[in-house]
Amino acid sequence: MSKNREKTEFLDRAEAEKLGELKEERVKVNRTAKVVKGGRRFAFSALTVVGNQDGVVGYGFGKAKEIPMAMQKAFKDGRKHLVRVPRVETTIPHEVEGEFCASRVRLIPASPGTGIIAGGTVRAVMELAGVKDILTKSYGSTNPINLVKATVAGLALLRTRAEVSAARGVEV
Image (cartoon, rainbow, N blue to C red):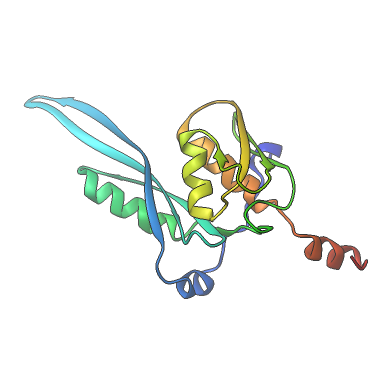
């Protein structure tokens, strides 16, 4: 597996079903046209972010002939790609950089009251993850799909002090 396509650990189905109500936010809807004898046939793809605003977030992508069906498929796909986000009060525990294809997203913890300093795509992920104070910067490709995947990959790399100390066998 290449460096920029590291395997992200998603929540298993049983854990995802326990979460109950998830909020959904549409990030991007794309329209494509196929020219046929009678005119144009349109198809739509939707990118959504789902989360409970309390430490769980995921993304979904769906395609269909109509926008509502594409949104529905994306939401269903989003429930399969959930990750747990460790938080310290209203921010993240440490600085991290997520990478997917040509997109890189740097996530930097911020002091309380800072808010979410991010572009629209990364902001949607942070809001639904329940992170209220964070600084972000995206590098490389601005493709919304890759930016969402890079952000979720970065959030999946986060570890709390307790997790790190347990892994090292050292007390905090």
